[in-house]
Image (cartoon, rainbow, N blue to C red; front, top):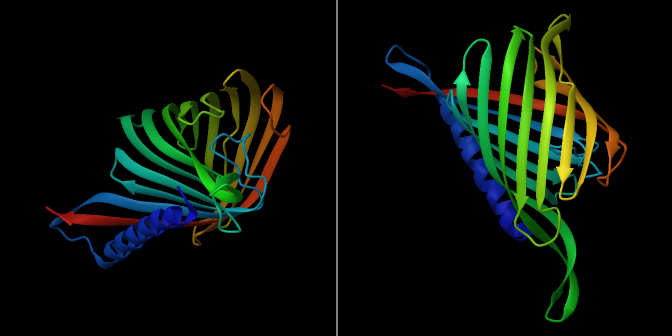
Length: 261
């Protein structure tokens, strides 16, 4: 997949997003309508792109586009990651379904195809040229969560991935144990969230254990936020930095749209 193809995919997704956003803003719920869908998203600018697995990073400034489209149970959640120079890093096309959803316990399952992009030197008409190539992956996840209080929950996150290209990595397994503390007031209209996690990661024949946490500060009346992720390697044979961190500026948006009965 070349750069032009990737840009076309992004433009199509963004066009769909804008269309849904305009449609949602144009509709006003009435007695003859019922709320059934949502369209949310976050745009992130960061000094260091950190992956879903926080031990993996882009190693330079990046911009993320994370979308969430769907209903109460089934959602489509595409994730587009780019370097600040406009070169694509990864496209992850999540489908997620909430199998169990009640006040105390929830269970979500998901799966995605993914494309990881890398600039490589390839032969074109016998001459070496640098081109953006993509590696194909398929992954599934399972995420149970138990609500301790309205602001606190415990969870387990399991992720299994497989690559379809001959070069590594081919198989990866992630198992994380996390605690979420959210909506903690720290001042007028300001709130705080943190998600510490201990996890085990296996990539082909190598494995390791890590601790990580993401800290997020948001304002109730503004769509902007600030977040930071810290990741520390405890014991691992997987290549990568012992300590990873970033700081990010977030722009959050949310829309809901209705359909006539």
